[in-house]
Image 1 (cartoon, rainbow, N blue to C red):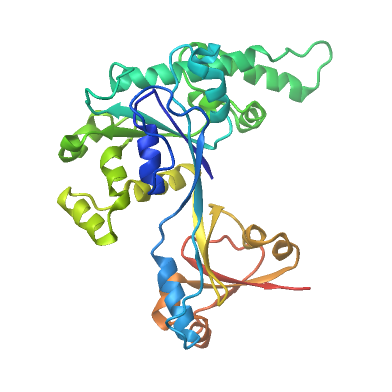
Image 2 (cartoon, rainbow, N blue to C red):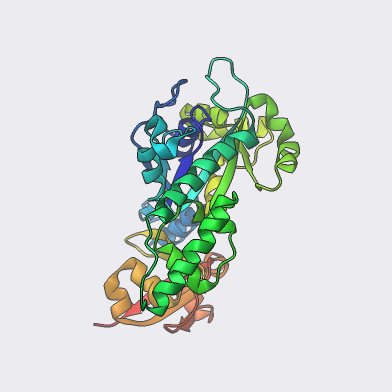
Amino acid sequence: MRVGIVGLPNAGKSTLFNALLQKQQALAASYPFATIEPNVGIVPVPDQRLMRLAEIVAKGNSNEENLPPIVPSVVEFYDIAGLVAGAHKGEGLGNKFLSHIREVELIVHVIRYFEDGNVVKTGKSPRDDFETVKTELILKDLETLDKQQEPKGKAEKEDKLRWEAIVKVKTGLEEGLQASEIILTEEEKELIAQLFLLTAKPAMFVLNVGEHDLNKISQIEKEHSNWKPLVICAKLESELVDFSETERREYFADNNLSETGLDRLVGMAFEQLGLISFLTAGEKEVRSWTILKGTSAVNAAGVIHTDFEKHFISAQVASFADFVRVGGWTEAKKLGLVRTEGREYVVRPDDVIEFMIGR
């Protein structure tokens, strides 16, 4: 899953990126265009279930001190340099930045909601800042559509439908709508998807607040309810990088926070993209695997290895709660808590699975 962090210069994108990675990988400078190439980070998805599974596997092997390796699901975050008005025409290296956005599946709009005289402010208000970015994305999409050719003569039915969809989307964009807001049939959506329009991508919003606004989170969320925003103080979270786990928990407690920005952001990103994770628990490793909701058992097996999909026989499935309660595969099987599922079984997010593979 590739997530692009975008916004105006000095909105706090690189600071948020650093906080998410829990280490200083991006240059969080106080001037525009500190980020030129997109910083890319592979961020593990926090999942407390994995440690519990590892402990059970180790206990079953009578070696509780030697836990199997834990491999969580990951999210690929792109810290994309700040956009400015005129980006679609190349202003502020805009064309380069916009091409980077085209490569991600989900856009996270980081919008400045803090005041700091030491950090140059390039926007006016949160809504104006978003409108600036939105306008540039729309103009870039219009540029893409303008390059499309109307079919001539006896064109194929699909080509005609594609052109009708292009005209419909272009009209909507010219009226200020994003491609994702334009009503299209499923067939039209599939044809338009081939153009990789920027405003067709799912999006979520992060309001980057100052520490003094942390006690106003509910009020801020209500004021911008149409965005369904995630309110984060990126500066505060980036400062936690050098804290111990105990100090970090104390810090969150003092500021009435229950989760890190990473936990909340990844959770929302999963929801936006319709993703879930299933689990595997063996002696070699305990692992979380990311799949789309509705994925069948045979396709989930293919996520692990293509041979698993090709030679799939069945899936041995236990719920995480049952697996933990009885202490692993052996007892779960004895007590009839392990189900044998076929190719078409739809994998659930709390499934612990062992795939049966032929030769």
